[in-house]
Image (cartoon, rainbow, N blue to C red; front, side, top):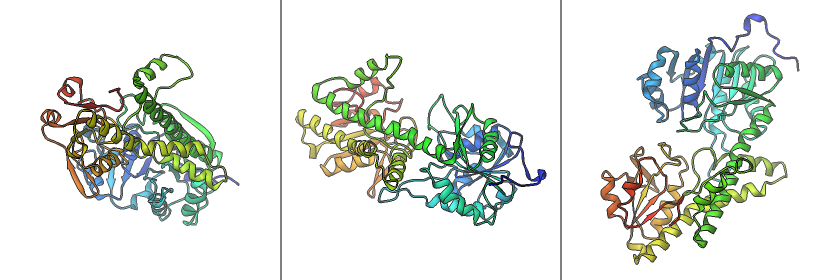
Length: 423
């Protein structure tokens, strides 16, 4: 392919102040949009949810991990719009929309397809299109590219196409969008170089992986690595419970080895938009290629079963204390998918509540950042008086160890279960 045969006037340098559009302003897209704006670019944010763009226009952040004052400081450098007309004025368009699983557990590219259609309608020569949404290998070239080329322009010839998978860890106080290195793959070498030029001014470092497929595979491998290790630790935790071993103490001891071991910790299950989802994109791709990844699929099943294991342990503790499970009141502390964030996507607390409710348990919940959690049409409101709720409950289950749940507060529990800790 002859690459980007455009007059010099149609090129825009990506390492200087330019206009960047970010489509999707959630936990991944908004931090990236803010990072672009803070580095000197003029950023236009788009989201299909009008309440998100309205919140940003009011100078507030719609995402709990991005403070309001960080948004306000940007002023006109970050604007939020409801329409897509501004896309044609941007030198780069970055797509950060969700790529979840459908009801059958298969990749759902609905939002990505819609975003690409929006971009294609306003695509012009010389633009750079970057897909940050997590996908399995082959999607950027096989799905995204044809949708964009419906514009009449050819990728790699009239516009650049790259994949730079997001690496956001919501709530991480050390690594954010700016301090985490980025992996980039391009349809062509020039596409990769243009994307690298854009990100070098925003992140700590850039690694060009090569083609699109290498970058796509990098992201699903990263999260599959975590998923498989969590599956191992959840199995190990059950084994330790049976033998009366403190699993966390063992993990912390093993972590003193400076090589060959990375600590993972048991919990109430695995949640969020990455760990329960991305490995299934990889597994889907592997099955389609005729090389099923048995370890990945087994780890997924183990992690999916973890909430039921935790519910079993709750029931056993109640019975051992002489309390009938069907009459018991269980207070669940932390309903988000990870500590100290408000995100409840795929939270393991939902299947945990279902399991306990099916056993007749009376369930109460508390979360400092989530006012309510709806499960199967039942609204579980966060209790207003935490200390009183702890002392009143027959069992307190720490599903997510938010920092507010300190030892002194938990001392008031009649019976306490922390999946990370021994009984």
